[in-house]
Image 1: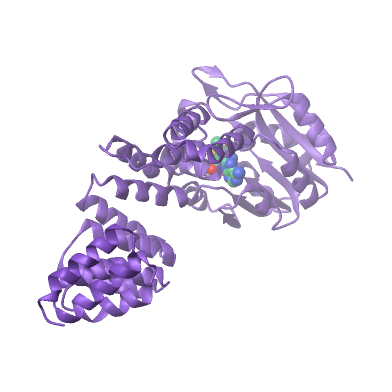
Image 2: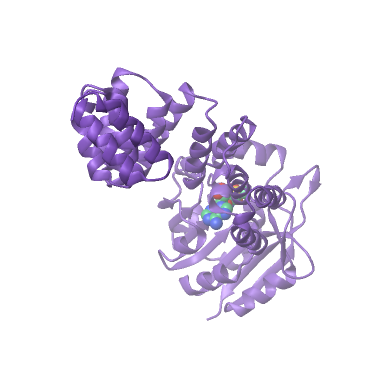
Amino acid sequence: MTTDNFPVLVQKGHDARESGDLEGAADFFAEALALEPDDLSLRLFLADTLMALRNFPATIALLEKPAENHPMLVPLLAEALEAEGKHAQAASWLEHQLIRRPSGHLHHHLARIHTALGNIGDAREHYAQALFLTPYDAVLLFHAAAFHLTHGWLGPALDLAQRALRCANPPDGIHLLMGDIWTRMAEADKAMRHYQMHRTQCPQDGDIITLRIMALADSPNLSPDFVRGVFDQYADRFDADLVNKLQYHGPLVISQALAPFLVGCAPKSLAILDLGCGTGLSGEPFAPLAARMDGCDLSPKMLEKAEGRHIYTQLSTEDFIPAMRHGTWDLVLAVDAFVYVGALSDIFAVAAETLRPGGFLAATFEAGPDTGFIRKPCKRFGHAETYLRETALASGFDILVLETASSRMEKREPVSGFVMVCQKRL
Ligand SMILES: C[S@@+](CC[C@H](N)C(=O)[O-])C[C@H]1O[C@@H](n2cnc3c(N)ncnc32)[C@H](O)[C@@H]1O
């Protein structure tokens, strides 16, 4: 065979590829490459064909050595390494490449590899760099939005997805992603609109959408990411806004309701758990009575403020139920915290399990419908007095106090609600 055959072989390779004969195309390209080993375009055609055949080891063998001198081969080599599960090797090739030439595409690729490796900080950094270099790349915006959603950063996820949606050619799944983001942000109507748009665009996803819509309708509670996002953003202003503007006095309402039952209680004698302790306003009145007082809150930023009060023995970012299971309590407090939960039966049951006999559960609530509970337009839940009574009794509590009480103002009106003190049956 002579170099005369080269163009013919290459052409035959392309023809085979076009007709879907991948094996044939790979054979022709390989034969041609044996004649002209320095032809980089041909090497890439062959590598691309091998990738299409999912022959990743052959792709790696074909690209690894020449990639040292020819950066254009690196992205495909990294893809083949990734496909073989060699993520760290793929990342090292791309990082080496980035030193020579900053590129949004390479940062994007690295972000996805670091995500697969579980290096979330590095992935976030590479997404930020990629977005800086190529801010209008719809696929990048889409992947970055999905990444941020997965890790619970709902604000950035929404911003990125909305930017992807404004691009000339938004990726196919963008409405599904928007629906998922709004779902996690507890915006059921907006989520529904996007799910329906996705169903129109991609009718083949009808079943997926039906499941999403069913889950949306069933969801009794707010997502932890949503609550965390709201309070992380609010933490710096929380005390000033609530106390000064909204005349928040939930801690006073609870301490007054509990006072008759704590008469004679020795200082520093109680094991107390403050559920949804926020910045610690609710723990403050009880600190003198606490042998230990733990707090839990989904929002790390709120907990930073609580830490600064030096009244808590231990603080954790756990949800109510796992936090209760860490100890045996004399008093479990939930001040303006159960308003972020709809169904309370599991929480009351675990409170009853983890309180000492005779221990107290004390909580404030916002008022709801005549029975059960509802999610109000402000996203907090309102509970019916009957629901609170029935749930507490069914969980093994005696009800000592269940009275109307308002903990704060909204739109210059007191928010109607209840204060409840229950005692675990002896
Ligand atoms: C309105 S703040 C009240 C804070 C504090 N108890 C007070 O009275 O100042 C509600 C707090 O409950 C937290 N929270 C809501 N749902 C929660 C959950 N499921 N688990 C843990 N904390 C939660 C929020 O992050 C927020 O800091």
